[in-house]
Image (cartoon, rainbow, N blue to C red; front, side, top):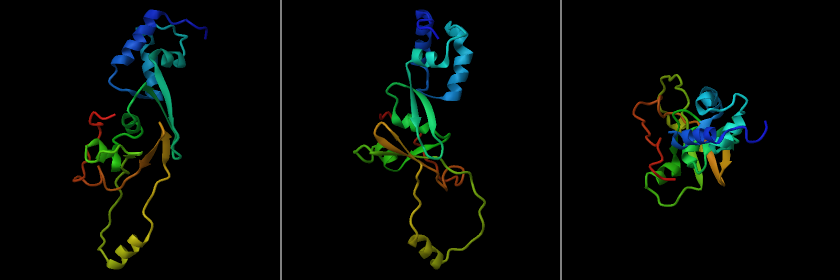
Length: 182
């Protein structure tokens, strides 16, 4: 596409829209739909590419290379790592040291960011605790994840918890907002 096909007025309309948008993070598909819907309102020529709109909007393409499923997001510059990682899975929440720090319970910022997305509820069966099964469970290595990506020189651990929201109504984490921290 030739350079300078987007007028200054259209460029300003795009910039203004994203400057005032509620979200700072956009999934590729939702951004493509938005661009398709808004091209006319922004006064953009039909030939304007998705990449040109992203450039006009000042969005940055971010790749989170999780081994289970790489994710691509388009973000406003300076987006909080917490807002970015919470966009990976619906109804996910920050956990471990990340949550402690954001709630002001520890002072030092976490080197790693932990985000949890609960698995769907599994059928439960009646069983009784038996000491030998408890001993066996604690002799095993704890569960770990290899679902780790890097962003901004930090490791992001994407966890798949069991026993959180949807699995136990008494478990209600409420760290969906980064408490004003960056």
